[in-house]
Length: 74
Image 1 (cartoon, rainbow, N blue to C red):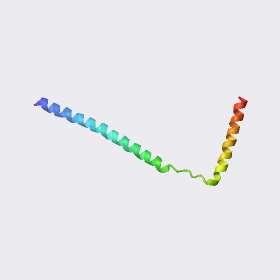
Image 2: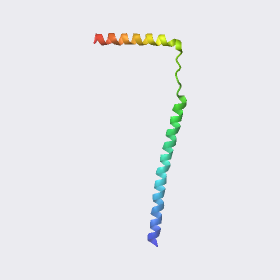
Image 3: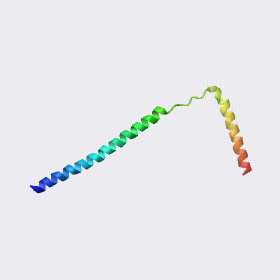
Image 4: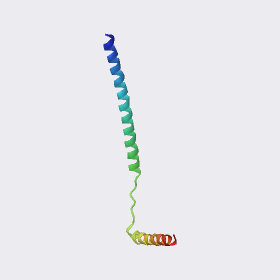
């Protein structure tokens, strides 16, 4: 009789340990989903006006020229 009680007690304790691990795993998953949702909500798509294309091209040209000059001076 004592052996059966001991087995049941061990089984319950094992179940509690497994349940605690699962509970923590679920908490971590929920937290990650919540953080991801917060990041997705904060993302803003940058809209560049069509008139900015020439300015962007000129900035790229100036950056390329500056990098070229830096490369030559090394």
